[in-house]
Image (cartoon, rainbow, N blue to C red; front, side):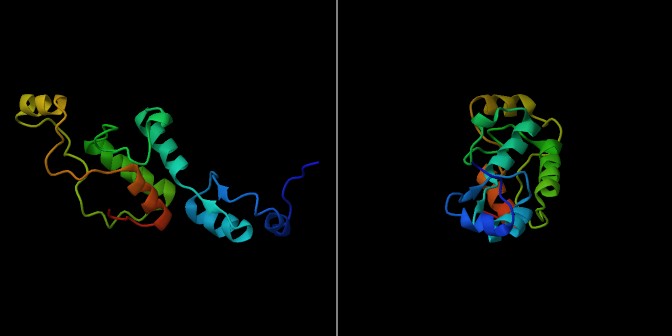
Length: 148
């Protein structure tokens, strides 16, 4: 008969069966509460993919660590800034260390037909740094912005 985990000694007894925890906790809470007791690794990637899926309305199965938030998911302008602010709040990440430009300014460029044709041909905006999901994961695990 299986019984739920009780005191920490039960978690230690069964720790060799469980090595990874995907929990709806912040990474800091997972590391503080679960990892020391059970010796598990707290994964952030599924939670961040879920967050991005909800923000962009793109299915989680289409988002991976290599997906670029600003180019592949189409997040740009004020939406990009809003995404980073919500991300920082939800995952408790200090984003004051961001020095790159990941999103274009809001509005329509003066030569919009030229820019539109370039986007249709697969060209990326000049001067923007790619923002992969893996960078969001590493930053959430570190608790501060990590440049890649």
